[in-house]
Length: 422
Image (cartoon, rainbow, N blue to C red; front, side, top):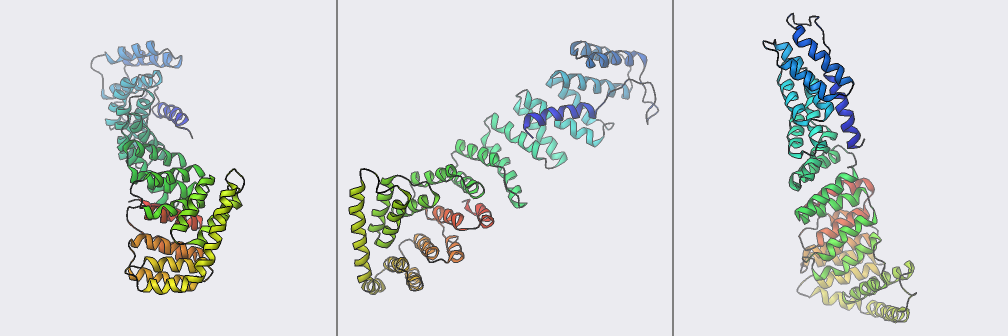
């Protein structure tokens, strides 16, 4: 249901919930009768209200209000009529004041009080009195408990008065509760949360929201947003540039020939020629390479990569021996990754484990690459487990979490989304 339809239905429901009828018949309380001096103008108000003559109806209510010596019941009934006239005529201040009196009265049933609180908040929102809408909605939620429609009204009231911090707080709580209940959060709620975090310049929170969006709504535009954040993040380590290209390729947002060429050259610089060849072949398969003015240059690079693969296969045993005596584990990680790309997965992963044990320059980048090698070897569950251990703020963790989303089944991806907040 749209918020507009909700508001219209709510207002009608509230007016119906506090019906007014002029009667001298006693109610449950013997004193609950109306004198003629009060009853006659209220009857006139009721007739005028039915005819939508709000000015005449309110004048009649004022006449009844002016009668001296009214009983508690008469005061209550006059207030009921004032609330009905003010609500239908859109007089927010008068309706709110009348509803406040009715809510405070012991005569008003609990359910009717809650509906009046809803009416106060809804009318204020419609009148663009957002501070009053916030106060009314919070009062209702405190008394009634969770109500998704009213929580949405509260979030929008905060947002429309540019209180992005509170809008984000309530929206995040609503989303978290939905996920905890095993349900899928509403896409528009995630979008609004992202809009608040953008205004607040909360990059960490925004990344978390994009990861959640990608996990439940894996649209290219959401992948593009989070990947743009990676590309422009000044904290991303230079050693991760190839990994940024690779997750972009996996997400389907890498299409430019120059990107494929840059990615291939980065893989060559990393000492991973077979990976470079695989990535270049992906460019040819997608149609990005081999069809433009740069086709000859691309073919020349591919020939060089093919030769580098043959050379690496011839020297890999010597590379492994040299890596064993190196001061860090980086060389062994590269050798092991090459073994995996050459089809020797078990040997390659074992060598990479030695590299991790020796200690790479950046343990998180090392674990990221080990996880990707496990995935390339077909050990998907192990890869996901490894990637979830990647930490830090240099981009390795963000990339690892995106790979978790790409590698996981839908249910596992949903479960992984909350872990992205840091």
